[in-house]
Image (cartoon, rainbow, N blue to C red; front, side, top):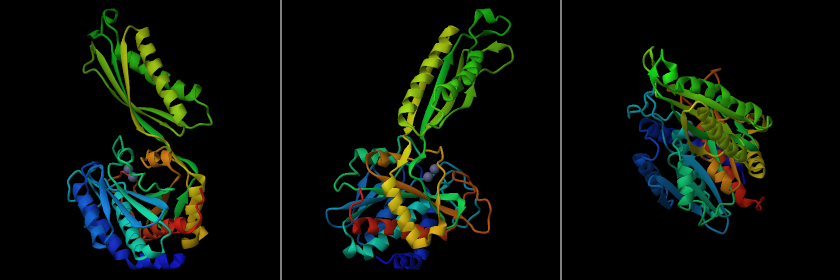
Length: 395
Ligand SMILES: [Zn+2]
Ligand SMILES: [Zn+2]
């Protein structure tokens, strides 16, 4: 296959990819209510004769090609509850909602790849399954819902590929990593119930603030002393609410936080430790602690063979000099659910304008990825799928 020609084909539809992205950017919708976004995707697919089905209410699953083999490409389609501050002329027209994580670009890039793949349908060595996935930003994650609804069956993809725009590297740089790439991300909630009293008569109450203070410090010992130091982990208490005035000990303290890990086994052990330690510490003072974790996404573990495959394709198209190693981050990403089921590779694509040394990051109200990267993203998605299906099954 001539990958240069795929890149030039992608460059030739760059205007359309950018226009689609700007439309999506102007009309962002929150997780699981991406109704207009879904219709936009459906119409775009209809226009180029690509059949699709709907999953998870707003998810769109399209198939290109025929045959025994199948490979999947995924884009997420939801936006965030952020007030946009970019000042762009195609800024959000939906107050309080913004595509601040680049999912508008991911969707437009996958639509671009769809167009390229459709023109080459006869040459495909199998089926390319395009997954336009809702609700990446919100637990339980659209990926887990689509998987339950059968997105990875009929046909079963041999592997799945996805990408994320990345503000830390310049336009066109593609970065890969094998193994752990992003962390599990669980939400933690504590309610410590003591017994309120006059602050001058502490012996008549049970002070939940003192218990909370001790607990915040104590729980770090789970991460520093019970975790294998070779397995990264973060426990952060990020919210504490209690009390109102200087002379009353309140009844209740509420804490919130997050647990991050690259190791699913340790993650569940840590949650059990946190529960046990929190309850025991409160009980020691005669208080009651209710600990409620809300399980988020599992760690995202990339398959080495799939990564090597996609990396080779990227190096062929763009040159090895713009392909780099990604340093794993303890962010969460629901692509992890696919990676638990089938070999997966998630890569990041630089979107920082070349003349800037800093671009406001993901989930920032000023996030403005450089549009020059989008055609490259479409080319890479299409090329990886074509390459995968035209080579013997590597896995
Ligand atoms: Zn995000
Ligand atoms: Zn994202």
